[in-house]
Length: 156
Image (cartoon, rainbow, N blue to C red; front, top):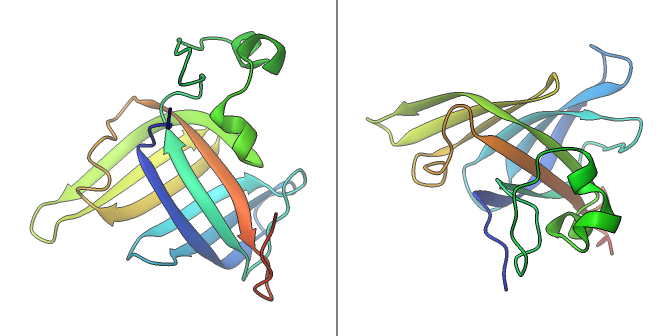
């Protein structure tokens, strides 16, 4: 059974700004294949990212196993001993947050979604169709993993 993602794409990190906060950096990323743009804050102490690396990014509303879907309400629900195997196991960095703003420009079919993950922010720009499942106050999981290093080497 495959997992449903609200959004999924691969991005190249154009720049990393670590100047604002001691443990958080803002990634400015450009889609590898589409005209999507992503700015996201991450904890760069637990998951350091460098300009030039390629990331696979997915956003979903639920991380419970596809064969046993259920509502995850507390941190205990996410404990692997209780949750079991989940889509999070396929990613290196996961954040849980809320969509707080969405802007759709009808004339050029562009959309922007803003999310907050406990103060770490995300701004995702894409076409309106790719972001149609996002609504203000939705809770979402951002899942990321490295795909390629700076020199193009493939990560395992």
